[in-house]
Length: 335
Ligand SMILES: [Zn+2]
Image 1 (cartoon, rainbow, N blue to C red):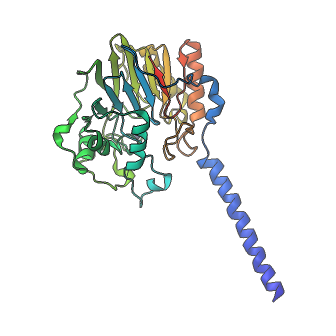
Image 2 (spheres, helix red, strand yellow; image 1 turned 30 degrees about the vertical axis):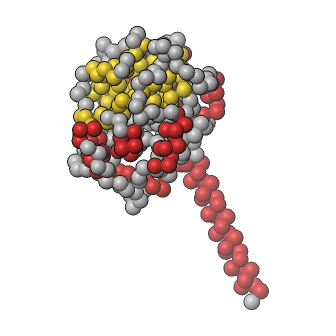
Image 3 (cartoon, rainbow, N blue to C red; image 1 turned 180 degrees about the horizontal axis):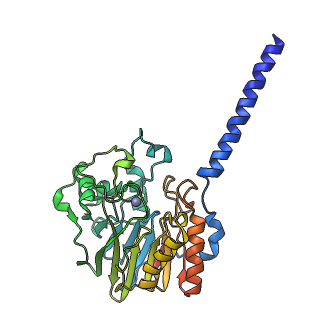
């Protein structure tokens, strides 16, 4: 009897050890961050304390992925509506995602989103990591939503009135307070559902993969003599940015490090070399299955190679003498 128990015990112990070894293997091979962002501290943008904006000053706050808040004290604009950042398990096919109202409310309170000032929410494309919270934001803040037809269907699914949303008019410059916004046709980083649309109103909770890409966009934002360019997705349409210049480039690097050298070089030539910015701020490098904090982690290894992407951009910008600064979650930079 004693012998049988100890044999079973041995089997259990061996089983547990194997499970632990397998878990460690899965973690380091797939789930661990694909870059230690702390190793890039020398590139962190200097910490600024919250201050009242002076005349003509623009504050940009990074909210993870490619969610950004532009604010000049009178007018606010938001790029992308994604704050909820549901955990990885919610992305699995049998699971669903939905807006985390508390998370959005807390973040908006923290960064000072103002019902009277937020004049526009611009959706880069309709994957859930850009568009999940657009309807909730439209409902809570009353802001106008701009996006593709698929973005409109995300709003309609949650009962947003069609009058509160507009389909993009590409290349047409809009005036919003002292800001102008020009939406440009762009291209998504290599993806499985490029061009697929959300054909009918999408109600939450929804399967994450039902947030199809549709079409991707870039944003040229000006404020008096300042020019900002936001490129949420790491891909290019050859020649599309030939005539575009900006001082500051918010550069999407999601899955850039997972592409081959030729793609990376073409991306650089067709974005950075065309826009000729003085400063580049990388976006879409963080693990968006973890909550928005001021200590964001890089994308996990199964999804990207953030280290390769960062190293590539840093090396190229050094040669071109372009300033490169990393913003952490909630961090603001003033222009
Ligand atoms: Zn996407």
